[in-house]
Length: 424
Image (cartoon, rainbow, N blue to C red):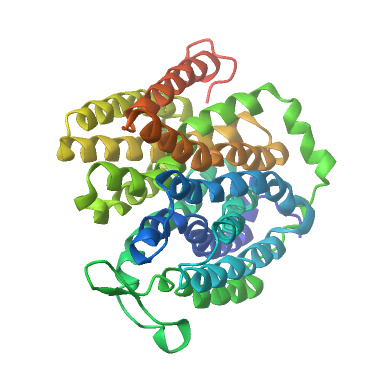
């Protein structure tokens, strides 16, 4: 079958039903990938409570390492769909998540587990981080240009929701011995309460197996989406590949980096409110489809402009309220920052299929996502450095604001101004 979603008759009669089925299987598969990728953001804050003795810097590193590995793997995953097929790669990349899920569940039960083992398991969680690039590239093939922003927003936004899901579910599931018979004994907290930290990983084993099976039987490989790696690699010669990479780092890179670091930042500044850590990632993920939809309606460059300005203002507000030790202002400002980053993730992704032809747009989506994923490594590490050297996370925000200012200028000059090179 020759896949041509730009043909209205083909789209209505044949394409739409296949595209939507693949999208709605892709979403939960991607959500599980994000869950595994970001699991250390919530596991790390509990390790010292159950007998481990890691430094703050070591804990921030555990939260950051999955980002480093995941971002690097995205460069491989970007070209995998064109090489192996969307269904085939989704099945493989989902099934392999079992390795870190089982490994973490075993390792956290023994406080004598060496730090290098924890680092290895954190690195294996990077397998989940790679999935976003392949998932986005795959879904972009299925939909016509006029619906790509919304489709990619739904796939990315609901998939990104895995970050908030793991941050919300983990504190609840570790308080019950639901897997005690097969998953191991509880750990005792300093206040005498029992938790089962291994549940944070074991709870995802069955969903991973189920989604692997569903993807195998329910998804499709698009024949004319196949491309050699060398054919796809032409994108690195395109100037706009690098400009859009910068903009996506500013938006999605901020979202995923803040999501990885927020629980630890919250614990360091307002420890009594760590249970609210999931809110940031939840609102950012929920905002992503909105950003994609608004961009389909009003233009991605315009939405991105508003988003980047809001992010700069939000970052400044977080700095102010952190210095003033005002929790309500700190939380609201950080949530505004998360929402703007989420919307920007959708708006910048909508711009790419407008700027590039379909055969190039898919690998560009994956390529930009790969670079942006380094935010989940760099931002926690930058926060860790800031807290360790200055005693506050505020110093890190000076770097973020400078990055946003440059992004505003790039987006305006190349895409948003009246005589821009590409209007989108």
